Image (cartoon, rainbow, N blue to C red):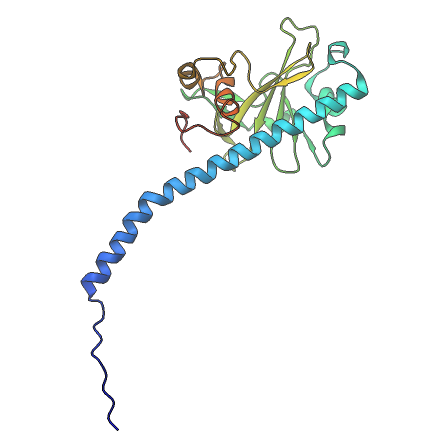
Length: 224
């Protein structure tokens, strides 16, 4: 019995190369966007988690020690050891000297050392670093304590405002952790975009994200 086979025509080399070229173009257009979206989601998750951890720690500290307006003025090290670390399991104290090699840069390239203001840190078991800036002083003029969140560390110890590092503040008179300061969700958005990443106005970046439901908005001025 004779078998009859139909002629099967394969792809030509030109067709294969064209197909590969199309795949390459599509990949070049989509992969950077996918990577950027992934980086944004990591920032959103870590930022919200750090805020929750610090806010809860302060709630427990107030419950055990009374209103923070009545606390004694203490330096960053004592504040961490007395009011934060006991309420954050698995956290590790970071000495001032360990912060000296770490720098954060604003949108203009100006450098701020992590040790500025005699700061100390507390590293969470999930990797984020809470930076306590200067003394915790209930009698300060504005009644505000400053914190910073470094979301992850890299080998160069070089970080950027609004991308790797975010500022948070604590209202001592109201015993409330603020996700932004000087700004709020009623602030003109164009102002927040203009100020985001500027040292001294670093809470603008935080406000943009928090006021957008803890999501980085599409018009966020810093690229990922």
